[in-house]
Image 1 (cartoon, helix red, strand yellow):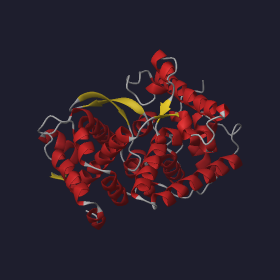
Image 2 (cartoon, rainbow, N blue to C red):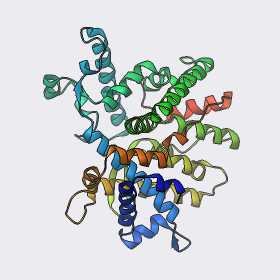
Image 3 (cartoon, rainbow, N blue to C red):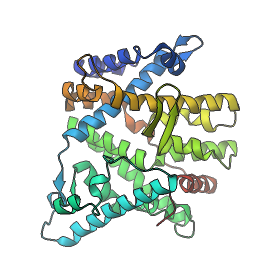
Image 4 (cartoon, rainbow, N blue to C red):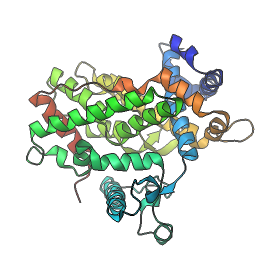
Length: 356
């Protein structure tokens, strides 16, 4: 346990320990499979999974409390329809891209998926108009403003003809400056700490830039040219997972920080096939466990854990968690070689649906 744990608020420490306690109440077989190493439970691993669950609870709580507004609410000049229409086009593209992506992968997103209210083919959505949160607006604004994100969304990043190596590096320099600005914002207040942390979490979850950079460096170091597409998708995309304990679940992997730790064990050449498959299956069970906690777990009063957490915690508590968890550790300044650029293009090519 890091000494920084005690920098969290008393309430946040209590809630965190309650999550750890709930993990201890899992069925013995499930608990032993996920946390048991050499016949004993690895408490460092338990705490790592608890961090991931708490982050998901904070994200749910933040989204629940983040009010939605019309697009005009966020614009400096409400009389200028061009900016509003530009944001509407971005949102339209996002929903079309996600629908196309789900068709390519062979499944449908659930009716309450986060993009559902952006779909203007739905008559009720057309009547009410686009209503988005501050975080939605921030992401859409940066799809427009960040050349790298735009190139990823439009799938141009995979082609050296569409994005030259020189331009590729310029795009990443702009993205690194964007993350540095988030880090500076996080220092201003509790609200800024939470917003900036969740913003980086959101961007890494949607566009796994840091994950792919770290993996591209590993591939270069070990002279690896290909990776298993399923294993990569497991860490980065929305997909069905077969859990040996709770059956089939659909999970959108958001292990923005945790997947950095498992990359060498899944994609490293020095890991034998048995241990690699063991780690893949362990990641599957952790993702299923998070779904279990978010959707299937209830407290003694039959209140879902996620609602219990939302009711009991506050912005101050969440900020203290992010100071302990520090998601900004996933980011590093990029240094490029031709091989790393080729690896990055290859990795994005594996997970991006063909352009519409």
